[in-house]
Image (tube, rainbow, N blue to C red; front, side, top):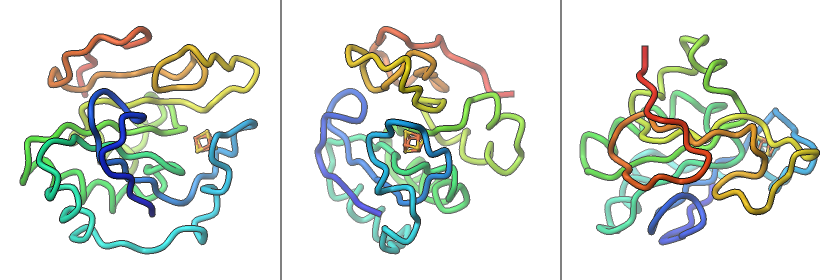
Length: 162
Ligand code: SF4
């Protein structure tokens, strides 16, 4: 796990970005292949992450990696606490598609606590460096709550959870 404070790269505005280790999508051309192996990270508790997140009163929160959905229980616990204890928004990147997540009871446990999901694997043959916050156009910026007001090209209108 790595934490980047006050970054502007992972979603709109200032954000505290949590980069987890562990991703088994193994997309060709991945921006961060060193994150594939879970052993490349170090363990951090939810309480430790919350302390860092709450110490910054301005920044919202982003989950990236790696793929946070490979540690879905821990990220659900963290996201739930963020929602209970702050008014921060949460963006989350994943190599799973939204449909794959919805089809899995296990994976979908995180969705109710996210404001925005950026979904799908990176497809090298479709790489587009002009896209905001994603690498290929199959990846969608899916608004799950109406909390984020910025309309970014490629955004899917608000999607109601089942
Ligand atoms: S989902 Fe993201 S981190 Fe995982 S292999 Fe694909 S591009 Fe890399």
